[in-house]
Amino acid sequence: MKIAFDFHGVIEAYPEKFQKLLISLKVENEIIILSGPPYDQIKEELWKSGYYRHIHFEHIISVVDWIKKQGVDMYQHEDGSWYCSDSIWWSSKARICEQYDIEMLFDDKVEYKEHIINDTLFIHVK
Image 1 (cartoon, rainbow, N blue to C red):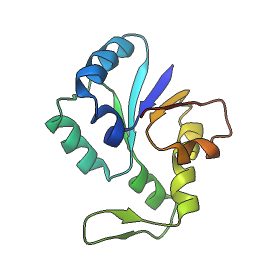
Image 2 (cartoon, rainbow, N blue to C red; image 1 turned 135 degrees about the vertical axis):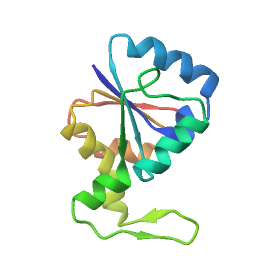
Image 3 (tube, rainbow, N blue to C red; image 1 turned 30 degrees about the vertical axis):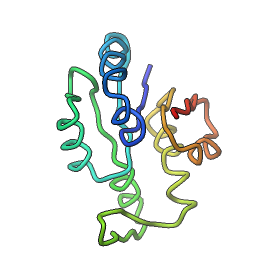
């Protein structure tokens, strides 16, 4: 089973719980970090938070990088945040889950849920 976890607001917010959970789940599942920022930023933030590839997860998928590969114009705000149309942003994780056959998505933003049209189970983390 492929299971994706958001970084900001999910595994970053509860590292003591999610580090143990990811290690346990990784034994029989493919764990993916699916988060908004560019790949290099996610990778660095994971490392600084104590999450390591091959221990807690196998793959990182960046929403920003994925959207850019679709040919969508994005711009970066001076605070480092990336922007595109809301419809593209909020539908991105659903489209990524469909493309990569992700069966579960843990995320703190319910806006992603309404766009899921395949069998991906959305789990809202508060």
